Length: 81
Image 1 (tube, helix red, strand yellow):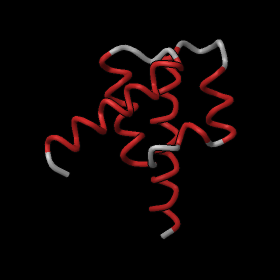
Image 2: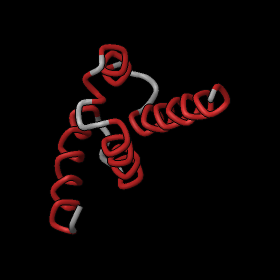
Image 3: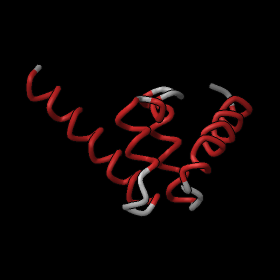
């Protein structure tokens, strides 16, 4: 991925995050990681989408929780490999 492609990817990810209230630099950075790691449609998965649309926790905490869930999932895969 070149710099122009990366810039475009970041813009796309940011546009996806904003409707969920994720607007801080930190939250956007984590959203971009999830976007790249899980694919651009990760937020459309039923359970994920429902979670992101809830009123609580606050948007940045939701992204933190998704990052934690991803880390736990990856650790579980490594343990079972």
